Length: 240
Image 1 (cartoon, rainbow, N blue to C red):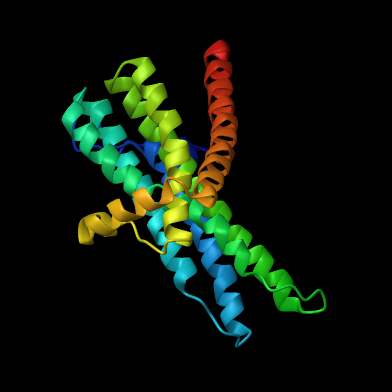
Image 2 (cartoon, one colour):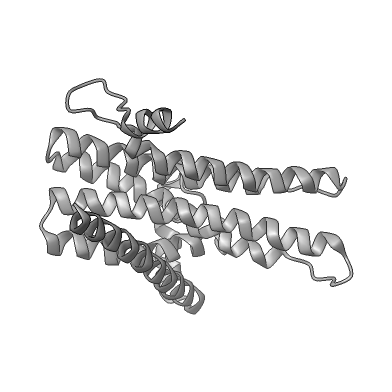
């Protein structure tokens, strides 16, 4: 078993040398996939209660995987082939369009109906929190990967500026989705509607509150993730 685990740890999925994708790079995706399946399991239990089911949670969870896969793709491509600024800009815009889908599921907690004597109340609380948690994890990991890419391709100040701008923009995207009932693909399907909503929302106090508070929440969580990873890397180098 120990030899198998050692082989699994050192195995490298390679279509080039050096490899574009290694098992080390796939570990976070595999872990997030397991967490997503756990969330879906909670939903299946909900179905067994023969209660009304809202499959939009599964759809929203799927949407949170889109920025994750986009960040995973561009991070590995630039790591292997070097600086590709035009491709990075294109993928970053695509990533930013779907990134708000990650924190969006926090707002699903507003659908909770409270009845302390009802078992479904407690199950729904745990289920919705699980979906929101996994979706947030997807968003934070994608933010880490896209930030790595920006740091690799652009100047450090530029990458930090892009990072700080993406946080409140994600909150604004949540506002557009929850309050204005817009979708990420409306950018391609109806860009005029997007522009109209942008201008109408600039003076909306709710838009400002959601943008700043979700941006602050994402910033704090990302800082914790970054600090843990940095400590792990430095601690590992010190042991070596």
